[in-house]
Length: 207
Image (tube, helix red, strand yellow):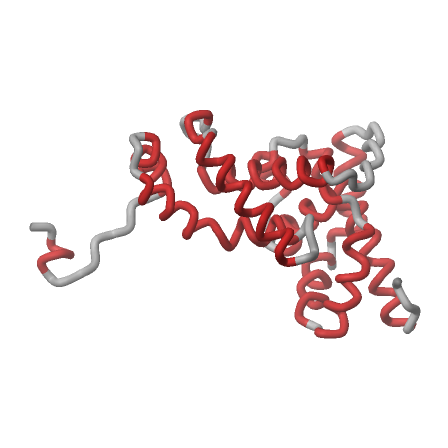
């Protein structure tokens, strides 16, 4: 008997890869375990696209359904945590298109060096400000009015970079975007958020 079990220790929880393999073999309990494990991250991403809780929850549920139906398409070596957030992002964007939400403006054609400069231009204090805004009750109200004015893909880039503190390279890999794409989207979101911070300090209504 393994020492941990002989001592009364709990059996280690299976990792994502083991759960995925079990789910592909028809073990529905294994997929339920994946849902429970990754539901908070999926809910956080969907809430960056939809600000009404029921709509965000519906989008998260749809993302897990799509993940279950397409689990066989998960490529070996790709972490489930990355894949499910990519599925969630695409699912949310599809819902926005189906609902006839405003189209996004196309990205400007910029080089990797230009995008890196944009990133440095606003990134220095952005993580601190993003988290400070979310902690303040008054500022959360401001964010609720400001964030819907930011394009959905820009919002999710901002959240993953500044809200979760992920690196540009990680976000690019997670969402299947180029690093320049991530940097430009984050730049645009940070610029809009920075404007809201200035307006808040000046007492200017943002709505």
